[in-house]
Amino acid sequence: MREFAQNHRTMGRDVWARWMNNDPLTIVQKNPQAFATNQIIYLEGAAQDEYSGNIGALKINEALSQFAGRHVFYEPAGRHSDRVAERLQRGLNWVFGKPLSDLN
Image (cartoon, rainbow, N blue to C red; front, side):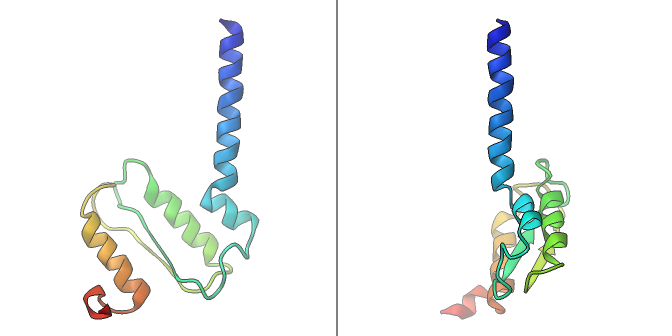
């Protein structure tokens, strides 16, 4: 049983290390050129996000402020899955600089 527990902890550390190597905030902090200055980056997370997506997105936005081009962070009221279509529409409108319905 002790061997299983030790292997499980080791596997957990390995999985966490792989996650951190691919974590957007870690990538931005390690490599200021991770995003080109001509990229448009829209970040958002609901204020009551039960997965704390808003906190991660805000931290990424703050890191991008030091070296990236056009980016924004939006924190709407609600939870993680609230008003997803409306939030997606807002993000697309910001990225394209006009309402999505005008893109046709």
